[in-house]
Image (cartoon, rainbow, N blue to C red):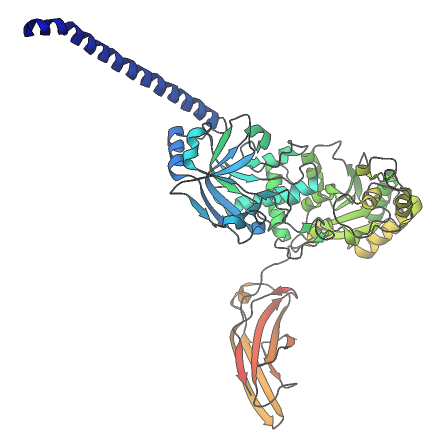
Length: 582
């Protein structure tokens, strides 16, 4: 009976084995399909990532690195206004329009500010300091959350992430964007010609987008374009923020506009940047006759007697005069002309930023409409006056009300005032000078700056004759900006002449670097302070030793500092303080 029972169960056993084998095969097939689908997805995402560049990316390896190590951040700078941060695997959610920091056990966040990161921000995305539309921050998520999110698309290039401040205005383009980008890229060796710029402010390309393209061999990315690549973008290596060391002007958001209090750039760095752009634009300076360039505007702030002005300049300086126009010529052709000019004449406006391309010794002449005080609007005067720019600057102001044409009927942003109360309109029309004001919608400023002007030729030429040296490009020498070193071997000796009379002799050796330099004028600054007092006696001396007797008391301890000065304004460091007893 047992044998019969076994025979009866054998088909069932075989059937069970067959079902198990088929199930195993089906499970393996399903896993194979799933793996193939995953590979296809990764291949698709890899292709998407490589649409950014030719850089090869191992998608699986990048995803694993993000999941296991999360985001890593190390910043320089103590405050949000001077901070630039380097990230590995910083991500951006295009739907939420938020940057994301993924935490894992291997994440790094330096500085780890906690809630101070929101007071008011981690950093400024643009070079315009502490403007609330330019703040950068990120949201935080655990790396485990990646399982529930869209698969990331990786950007394999080294990227510089920033905001352009106003890409429709040439002054802003150069001062706020191009110069800071160029020198931020100089700070970090991997932000080279292969790096990619990513603009997050949300503007469209703008009329001068080709200028941004000159900074890298790769096409810049706009915020709107990121949405076309995926829902979660992850930058494998990125720098966020811009250096502010190259800016020289503040636009009046907190106090009326004017020169920055602490300018850190010289004309030498600006001229290096201008040379870089000219090289990228294939512009070379051709030697030839001297000529004067007049910037022509075609829509507003017109020079109504332009032909008369051109003739007067030609007769006064015996030079050819030419006009250039942003509306009628390409930017590179304008720079080609300006880079060989002896003088640039223009109404106040963003086009004056092109004066950075003028050769050394040339003159920048800025014209201001009626009731606009040149001393209150000085971005181009400041630029021309930077050490190493070696430009002459002249401002002319229309003081004749009959020589101006106003447009009160225009829209407010083009200088119109009809939308204002009648009393305010009358006040503006009667005003002789725009009072100092904050940026950016002051109606009186807009009304006056959009006037057209008939230049009074006599007063214009008088201003040029009074303030302008005859431009001579061939004789201009580059001004030295080399600072002296410390004076060496400072010593002091004292002698008491009487109970109320003493002498203090101080001597020193020249700075080490002076023997290698040709310096027109060398002087020495000496400070003498009685120990325990708050005030000191300063002296400027032409020699390396001097005996002081005035105000020197016997049996008294003095602190003495000595430093060298080149050419009146190039200061060296003070040598170690001398302690001298009489």
